[in-house]
Image 1 (cartoon, rainbow, N blue to C red):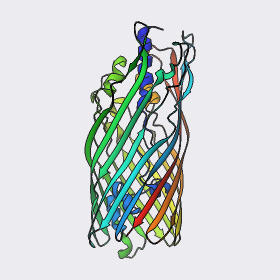
Image 2 (image 1 turned 30 degrees about the vertical axis):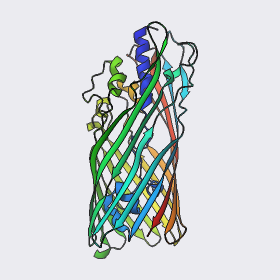
Image 3 (image 1 turned 60 degrees about the vertical axis):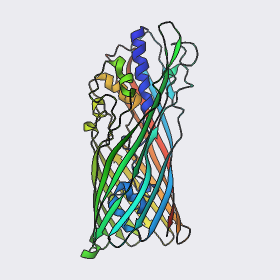
Length: 414
């Protein structure tokens, strides 16, 4: 294999490093166990303090002070296979599974009622985070010993800190949550040098802070004679993050021009929702639009906007509740004519999940303490994109991606 071809292959394998483990693109389908148990719905149905990031207008449902903390345990399964071109000088690479099979995403939410009109809260929410671990992958035809997927070991984490402030009058609630986002990205891999030695490559941990806001509105029609009906709307601003040297270093051998450089901007999104409560039964539906195509970084790599549809149902008794849900989102990663982007996206950003099934429940231990659980299942998504024309001995790339996750929440009210 020529050295230029090997360099391209190394870089393409590198992109696996920045895979985010989430659901709708690289966003969680919901914040908190209640929302995730109901398919990610939360624009019109309140989840107490947990609503501070989702739709902050809905923290007006609390009667005193609520403290909620917990997290989501992800068990992802990601594998990739490079399909050999006819007559290729390199034997098939085979399928490699990432060893990064567990990931913990934390959440803490606090909200309090100041008076009949004003509510305030504070929270820290993990919104995305994962990496891959191919340190044990072995591909002997390229070199002696371990070298499959170039022994990529990477990690990306995103945390948001916010202070929801809500105002309520009659059935109308409006709110805003100023956001400070922290992110870090670390990419490390091994590659051969012109002298035949194996060099460790990495620019070290890149970190950044970004700022944005979430805004929400909700209206409860109960006082207008339609008891149990609520509608809501949300807007989330884009948040710009810059990871020095990460994307430009990874894409240099592709000769790709990145207008945004090392910027990877979390996209803006907006949504509407409706919820109806009828005795013990609650039904909820959300629609969201996530503007990946106009987000710096994601747009450079051909990501498309996603339409997200979420359905949720809850049955509640005095001291317990059960929830089920369904979430569907268009894949942000699609096959494009530029096969460099196909390879880059599918190997490194396989955000191809579309369908999620959820189930959850709550148990009230006492008048002040309760526990929430949720389970989310994403069936295997299999995509094959063309990689022809890259000067590589592979005609296409096949990626398989599935998820199982458990969210848990402990709530204390006073």
